[in-house]
Image 1 (spheres, one colour):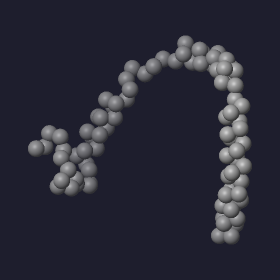
Image 2 (cartoon, rainbow, N blue to C red; image 1 turned 180 degrees about the horizontal axis):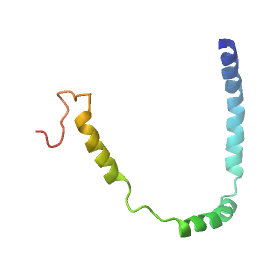
Image 3 (cartoon, one colour; image 1 turned 30 degrees about the vertical axis):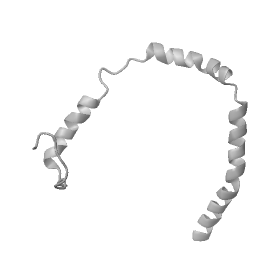
Length: 86
């Protein structure tokens, strides 16, 4: 198994420069305006039909953190300051 893994790693090491060159070439040749035109209808559809959530979820996350606080099994080191505790 170790030889197979080693061979796999070596293969990708050899392929990496050529793959990077292909990626660079494709990025240089891309037609950004055409790509934006092709995606415009999908973007507009999402914009019209997406209903944003009423909250970002931060309030709910903070509520979960408050519930977890009392059951924490990992006490903070003495040099840590907990807001509201001194």
